[in-house]
Image (tube, rainbow, N blue to C red; front, side, top):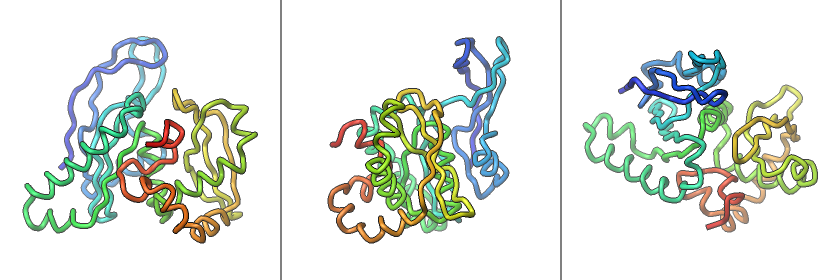
Length: 229
């Protein structure tokens, strides 16, 4: 089921208050047009009534697509430092949904791995990766290799993260480079797609050294930038 609720949010440009209607939960199988809106960046985009600035409000939302085997919980970017405690909450929510759902719905939930993402662009990245058939742990391990190979280039930008945006026709992967604290897009990094094959070849080693990416809901290389558990 999809739920929309009235909310009051602050404009990131002028800090003015805006009244908006935001999704509390989104069933993508029922409202596919909203999936396209997430992918193209127009989802929940609003204009500040005080200064006119356009922005996407950051908030908590459940995204579910049983046909695509996706069950994603989005939190505001500012909550990312709490990822360890939120992971336990996300896993618990799925277990409760599984226990309380009718048999038909429970069968749809069976085998789904819950995901935890932060920020509107985090949800957009998760859906783009699913659309392009990129396994989340594989993609995040590929980012770890990319970080090491592009360290001098990324170091000049300060603490930052790589966010998957597209696979190009020339076989390269396009990543947005975003500031770790604010999420501001600082630039772009293009990496040869063969890095995915290299990552697959090293998966046993990477799974042993980065088990959290394979076992926990917050499937993100950023968890190691914030401090390894």
